[in-house]
Length: 242
Image (tube, rainbow, N blue to C red; front, side, top):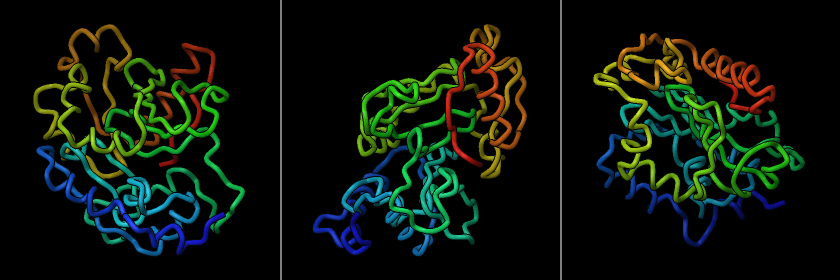
């Protein structure tokens, strides 16, 4: 186990590089103000250093709102943030006090999108919990297929990819004319529920023809998890606590 000073006081902190990447992005990215105490407690629990992008986000960032809030990357937000994103510690049910034996059971949930998609960082044995990809790889629970998909990259590459403009292609079949206005109207605990649902043939044929309403993210994730159980007879596992 490493002490907090060993995790924070590194020769090459990642935050300056990451901040420059975010500032240079052509994609709208709002960087929320951090809570220093929460950031330090979270990086200690994770046992990652400030030399990693994950450590930089947790320690120096309250979260990221990417593409007008379509994607919410979890950090350590200050309580007074105008648009407070759920914090990484709560989403992943960190213990109330530092526990050196605690690890995310199935992987670390690092972001949600407004459709109920979940980005998670694989743990040491993803196959054992039914996840694709290798240890430390980012995977995505797709709300249209109700499947985990391996993205083939680690956290730092994934984060740079998010703000590169690649999300337009990644979500090309899941966006409709006017989506930005609908997303901007949501609060931090809401997502968009579509009918017919995303995994239906009707939605796949013409997503713009679906009806959409704002619902709590908890409800959206619960419906996706229940649908996966119904169709596959298996549990997709932890999707984050909101």
